[in-house]
Length: 130
Image (cartoon, rainbow, N blue to C red):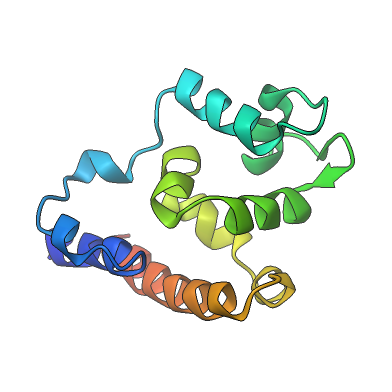
Protein backbone atom coordinates (compact mmCIF):
# COMPACT_ATOMS: atom_id res chain seq x y z
CA UNK A 1 0.00 0.00 0.00
CA UNK A 2 2.75 2.47 0.94
CA UNK A 3 4.57 1.83 -2.36
CA UNK A 4 1.37 2.45 -4.31
CA UNK A 5 0.60 5.61 -2.32
CA UNK A 6 4.07 6.95 -3.01
CA UNK A 7 3.89 6.17 -6.72
CA UNK A 8 1.49 9.04 -7.41
CA UNK A 9 4.18 11.47 -6.28
CA UNK A 10 6.15 10.61 -9.40
CA UNK A 11 3.03 10.41 -11.54
CA UNK A 12 2.39 14.04 -10.64
CA UNK A 13 5.69 14.82 -12.30
CA UNK A 14 5.03 12.48 -15.24
CA UNK A 15 7.96 10.29 -14.26
CA UNK A 16 6.25 6.90 -14.14
CA UNK A 17 9.43 4.91 -14.69
CA UNK A 18 10.91 6.30 -11.48
CA UNK A 19 7.83 5.29 -9.47
CA UNK A 20 8.99 1.66 -9.44
CA UNK A 21 12.29 2.66 -7.82
CA UNK A 22 10.78 4.92 -5.15
CA UNK A 23 11.81 4.39 -1.54
CA UNK A 24 10.36 5.91 1.62
CA UNK A 25 13.52 7.99 2.03
CA UNK A 26 12.51 9.85 -1.15
CA UNK A 27 9.64 11.37 0.86
CA UNK A 28 11.89 12.81 3.52
CA UNK A 29 13.29 16.31 3.27
CA UNK A 30 16.91 16.59 2.21
CA UNK A 31 19.66 17.40 4.70
CA UNK A 32 19.64 20.99 5.95
CA UNK A 33 22.57 22.15 3.81
CA UNK A 34 20.91 20.92 0.61
CA UNK A 35 17.64 22.63 1.58
CA UNK A 36 19.53 25.86 2.25
CA UNK A 37 21.22 25.59 -1.15
CA UNK A 38 17.82 25.19 -2.79
CA UNK A 39 16.57 28.27 -0.94
CA UNK A 40 19.63 30.21 -2.11
CA UNK A 41 18.89 29.28 -5.71
CA UNK A 42 15.22 30.21 -5.28
CA UNK A 43 16.07 33.58 -3.77
CA UNK A 44 19.11 34.35 -5.96
CA UNK A 45 17.80 37.81 -6.80
CA UNK A 46 17.03 38.85 -3.21
CA UNK A 47 19.26 39.48 -0.22
CA UNK A 48 17.20 37.25 2.08
CA UNK A 49 18.85 34.62 4.27
CA UNK A 50 17.93 31.08 3.19
CA UNK A 51 17.50 30.13 6.85
CA UNK A 52 14.76 32.73 7.15
CA UNK A 53 13.02 31.31 4.09
CA UNK A 54 13.02 27.81 5.53
CA UNK A 55 11.70 29.12 8.84
CA UNK A 56 8.81 30.80 7.01
CA UNK A 57 7.99 27.62 5.09
CA UNK A 58 8.16 25.61 8.32
CA UNK A 59 5.77 28.02 10.03
CA UNK A 60 8.37 29.22 12.55
CA UNK A 61 8.62 32.79 11.23
CA UNK A 62 6.10 35.28 9.80
CA UNK A 63 8.17 36.75 6.96
CA UNK A 64 11.46 36.51 5.11
CA UNK A 65 12.04 39.93 3.62
CA UNK A 66 8.74 40.86 2.01
CA UNK A 67 7.72 37.21 1.52
CA UNK A 68 4.95 35.70 3.62
CA UNK A 69 4.35 31.98 3.96
CA UNK A 70 1.82 32.08 1.09
CA UNK A 71 3.91 34.14 -1.32
CA UNK A 72 7.10 32.18 -0.64
CA UNK A 73 5.31 28.85 -1.10
CA UNK A 74 3.80 30.09 -4.37
CA UNK A 75 7.29 31.07 -5.56
CA UNK A 76 8.45 27.57 -4.66
CA UNK A 77 5.60 25.94 -6.63
CA UNK A 78 6.27 28.10 -9.67
CA UNK A 79 10.04 27.62 -9.60
CA UNK A 80 10.79 24.01 -8.65
CA UNK A 81 9.64 20.56 -9.67
CA UNK A 82 7.38 18.59 -7.37
CA UNK A 83 10.20 16.24 -6.42
CA UNK A 84 12.45 19.18 -5.47
CA UNK A 85 9.68 20.65 -3.32
CA UNK A 86 9.48 17.33 -1.46
CA UNK A 87 13.19 17.70 -0.68
CA UNK A 88 12.47 21.03 1.02
CA UNK A 89 9.17 20.50 2.84
CA UNK A 90 7.56 17.30 4.17
CA UNK A 91 4.24 16.23 2.59
CA UNK A 92 2.25 17.04 5.73
CA UNK A 93 3.41 20.65 5.64
CA UNK A 94 2.86 20.89 1.89
CA UNK A 95 -0.75 19.88 2.42
CA UNK A 96 -1.18 22.66 5.00
CA UNK A 97 0.25 25.24 2.59
CA UNK A 98 -1.49 23.97 -0.55
CA UNK A 99 -4.74 25.89 -0.07
CA UNK A 100 -7.35 26.79 -2.68
CA UNK A 101 -6.15 30.38 -2.53
CA UNK A 102 -2.53 29.35 -3.19
CA UNK A 103 -3.47 27.04 -6.05
CA UNK A 104 -5.69 29.65 -7.69
CA UNK A 105 -2.93 32.27 -7.41
CA UNK A 106 -0.51 30.24 -9.55
CA UNK A 107 0.35 32.01 -12.81
CA UNK A 108 0.08 28.98 -15.08
CA UNK A 109 -3.07 26.90 -15.64
CA UNK A 110 -0.97 23.74 -15.99
CA UNK A 111 0.37 24.27 -12.46
CA UNK A 112 -3.12 24.91 -11.12
CA UNK A 113 -4.32 21.60 -12.55
CA UNK A 114 -1.23 19.74 -11.35
CA UNK A 115 -1.42 21.03 -7.78
CA UNK A 116 -5.17 20.43 -7.50
CA UNK A 117 -4.40 16.81 -8.38
CA UNK A 118 -1.46 16.67 -5.98
CA UNK A 119 -3.49 18.14 -3.14
CA UNK A 120 -6.27 15.55 -3.59
CA UNK A 121 -3.72 12.72 -3.62
CA UNK A 122 -1.90 14.11 -0.60
CA UNK A 123 -5.17 14.29 1.34
CA UNK A 124 -5.95 10.67 0.46
CA UNK A 125 -2.44 9.46 1.18
CA UNK A 126 -1.99 11.25 4.50
CA UNK A 127 -5.44 10.32 5.80
CA UNK A 128 -4.79 6.66 4.91
CA UNK A 129 -1.41 6.60 6.65
CA UNK A 130 -2.35 8.66 9.69
